[in-house]
Length: 621
Image (cartoon, rainbow, N blue to C red):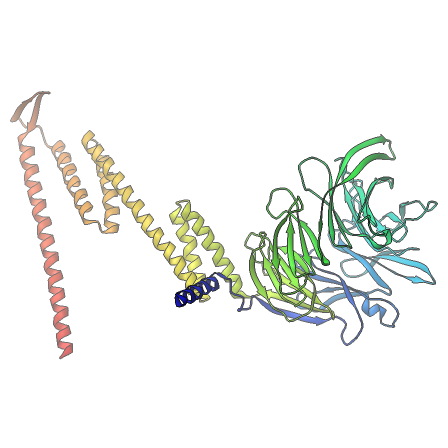
């Protein structure tokens, strides 16, 4: 009994091993690495890592923004904007003389190229000195302007739908709306009014009344709504049990969580909670040429609390149901997906803290992949249901991750930055690409097989078998061949059925006296039976061909003056005696020829066999 249990466990382990995707073979090959700070030994953080097409040339670039506290001569080395080429060389670098707080990569001036907006500053003699710089695709300065505040949050959007962008900047005292050139539109609160009680840490926009114009939502000790004219609408306080100075909203975005028509917002806090808020009771109280005013309420739909740091958060409609899911990489080593009601859809356990993730179709299989980076340096690929696809260890202390087609080969690469910071880029290796292509071909072939499109299915499966064979995947080759064998059987069955249909049509036309069509269809039936070597049905077709030939021959003879009248219950019928005799003679001759040919074939087979055996005996001697 004990031995049988052990055997059962062993079998289970073997089965599980067979079902588990292999991660021993490298999925990613290193493209390059670059030590961003060289030999500089100072604490530096990475504010942003993004694979994006900076100069709109169709090729992806790698943007890195580093930030570090001032206080040493190396401030400019610690605070810089880099753009790297696909081979890891620096295309350009822009040094910033103070600590960088926030950055945005966006086409802010409608030139079809990406600009980089950077906010930075420091306290100078207890006075905050902040600056915003806008850099073009080549790292040249387009514009800069200063404020007597440290702008820790920035956001760019077209608020009034005039095709020109405005810039929102939040500081420790105010929220400011300005044009891209830096000219101020308004402050909230106004300069003559009391400053905010808490720093603005996050900014987003939302269309409250579907008028194609945006209102503003910002996060500090709560979530607050403003009209685009800088007038307060309503707010919602988060973590009210805490002192306002100890709580803030670190992430904000508009969302689609339900079909009730109310605008919705997702907010993440420094206490690791995610709030879903709905804007309700929206009412436009007045409208003039210069201003529109609103009243509304912010109400909590649900809240989800994590017990460890939220390191990265994004919204994405994973299941294509028109509602957003919330994805979170957590310090506790899990990757989470929450649905639009705040329920956990799935979790995936990583081998260390989840630091960052990106969403892209990295292998070009038509399905998006969730590329997750753990602090151990492990890179995971998950599908939209949280299923494991592959894992690659990089032995780095990973900080941020981004993915995109860096080298222009049609497949995604992965860029990551470590704590040092050091930049790495990894490429999906060729075998993995071929396997992905083969898997796609197999899936298409299987789908066509299930739809009974056997010829089309066969074409895809033959290509899949070739690719599997070229990379030595014997199991997949056998699996594909098995399906091809089933297709051949199905095609043969279909052809046999078609031949039967043709024969039945030929017989029907023969009975009705349409010998031309009868001959056409019996020939088609015979060709199919010949393909499969069906001798029984071949003979059946040949007999029908003879009968058709006889009737055609009879109709071409002159009418004989000697006829035989045969009276039946249905009335008199005349038979041509000469034609009947000739038909009988022809039939006898044909049958004799067939029997003769059959006998000759059997004799030839016997002689060939005897000759082969004789040669074998001679060889043995």
